[in-house]
Image 1: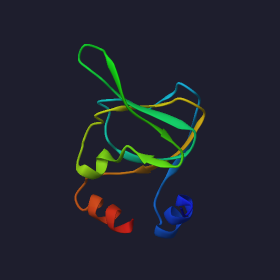
Image 2: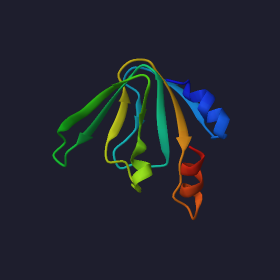
Image 3: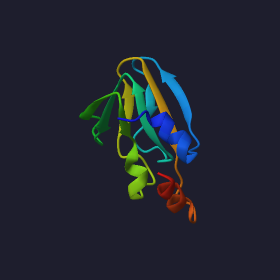
Image 4: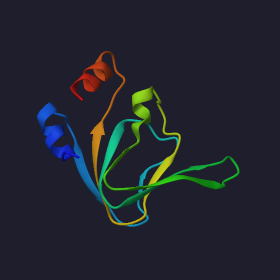
Length: 109
């Protein structure tokens, strides 16, 4: 797999990198769907919580992996939460469904 940072540079994608400690939330269920994430290092748990407060683990991701891609399907709010379960390094790619912006962003990929 080609290093995604090289690809991101090649197509000129705006991005930010962040580090998380074990147990840190990356995003929460119900929060705005405003970025796609690339897991560079570590492990992330994707889960949902029912109205009764019961957690269901959807998957555990190991680097390298993309997550939070619901933005690409038109989700306005996150339907799941992402939490670091080890030390994590991720790169987030801002995403917006503003007039014409989604089309431009997808074409750059």
